[in-house]
Image (cartoon, rainbow, N blue to C red; front, side, top):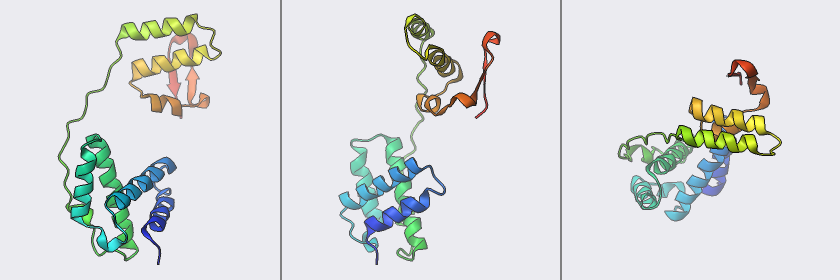
Length: 169
């Protein structure tokens, strides 16, 4: 029979079918941290109380969203173990987290955007136009840096003089 670390790897590889590989890898890391910190050697020792204790300890140093991410990973792993007939029920289902208020988005003041555009415009950077477009998208479309970094040139149709770009990807 496989140990829990091997099962976590199997979970990660099967999870890449439904999640991005980076998310599947993060889930595996979260599961392994739970198993290690809670001193869980086999699936029989996974319990509602061990999950609660682990999440409470994490809550002392991590954000509520990160705690929710850990709970989600553990919940998915428990479902995986049920499918493998290694757990009879999901102990994570009984763990309730307090609702958290969403944080308001951080808006960059227009003056800061203009200063950034000026500095890029005055620079000798090779991809100056790309950076200016990225700044405009971030400032005017509410895009996150991670979303900007995922854009590729083929995803942008620049309409130069008309003053807008169309995202197609």
